Length: 135
Image (cartoon, rainbow, N blue to C red; front, side):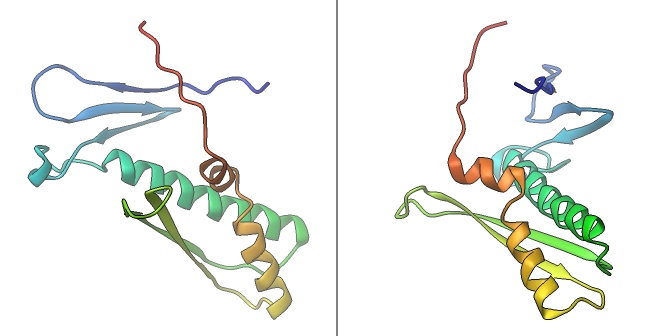
């Protein structure tokens, strides 16, 4: 089993919904929009999940193209999160991948297949166990 990577969210207890998130060497503020009671100082938790998916897809595509020696230039991945209570599951993600560079049609098709194999995509599609415990 791989070693757990710990991410923390600290609420300084000064009111509001701003959380100080520590993930590896990065420190960011997570918040909610004004209409949800936040100050809109940072991404929402749903946006952070979308960011994880977008970055994982881009990294997976880049790693594969590099391994193959393919001429992949710029990669841009956009993720839209939608919630539709009429669907099961209610949460859904729409991933849009833009690939630039002198790629053949076959290379582009293969990279799009690889995009669906990123670890975060696979985790979200399969579901995950979440265990909550008091510290």
